[in-house]
Amino acid sequence: MKLDVNLSELIACAERMGSFVPDFAVEVAIEDSFELDTSLSSTAGLEIGLDELEIEQGLLGYRGRQVLLFIPDHGSRAGNVLAGRSEGNKFHVADCQKLDEMRSKQRFERYKATYNVSGKFEIFGTLGYRGEDVSGEAELHVCKLCLGYLNYRGYKNSNKAAKDSVYDAFDISEFLSKYSTLFRSMPKREALVDMAGYVDNWKEISRDFRQSHNWSCDHCNVNLQSHPALLHTHHINGVKRDNRPENLKALCIDCHRKQPQHDYMRVTHAQMQELNRLRKEQSLLCQDSWDELIELADTSVTDLLRHYRLKSYAKPVVGHELQADSGEVIAMFELAWPDKQKAIAIDYDAISLGSQYGWRVISVGEAIKRMNQ
Ligand SMILES: [Zn+2]
Ligand SMILES: [Zn+2]
Ligand SMILES: [Zn+2]
Image (tube, rainbow, N blue to C red; front, side):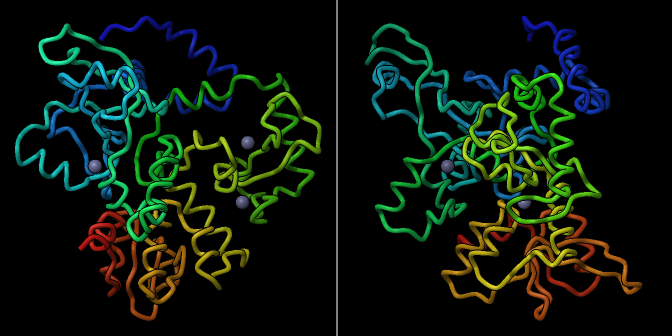
């Protein structure tokens, strides 16, 4: 695929931003990765085969990145769908039973993958039966089986009205942010684009501000003096040039991404684990109520927690550390029931280490599967 993009300009832009340079430098094939991100972030998406789709913890991935799947071919409905009628194909966000069906019918090659967040998808077809060919961008909606499979925002266990409101409010960006810790790779472009709009000396302003807040998160209170990169300076009114102290807040990356209009932010699994390790060390991981558990757990397991609460499970511990016989911490479980030696983990190493120490540890994907049995 040939791209009409000046890569050197983008790299120069990244260099001006300083902190993004190392990330770019370690990328082995920059152009390759850039092309991949460009097609996956477009409304046209990228055609992928069944064997290329990665089922990652019950969600959909392609080359380490989280994706959605949609069918561009709308046949004779294309005209109606392009005109805004809501009879378009649903897009998938999880390994739902519809995908299983498609796999067994070998109809999978018709799908495209994307992580464009606009809710618009490039589709094609004809104007009614035997009409002329049409194509363009149309709004498609999320597959309800996928929402049920993940218990997204409690969907599975809700009544019709509550289900409808989860479905109507579904936002792709928010969805991708919620599960970002389950994926190895993050799109590179979004982070760069997002740096636009700050004043030139923003880095110093931000550092001074966080220092004046003793490197602590204004929301969850975690102290990040030892990990300053995990603490951000947030603009309350959303205007990045408005740096009056009353418009700024120091927020850890987890609390920051939960702010309105911040769902473009991606948090990696390593960052989230480090954050919860520090919260725990500083006795900030209150685990008294289910609501507190849901607030502080990795967002990729909060819908499992909602299900467990409803089913009256014993309350798990968030961020349980597994210690070797020497006392050294060797792994962290996202959710654990220490008295039963049962746990749910994201990291596959944690799963195997856990079983070596007599725990029964399953992945998030396995826990999602069991929730549906
Ligand atoms: Zn689905
Ligand atoms: Zn925080
Ligand atoms: Zn912010």
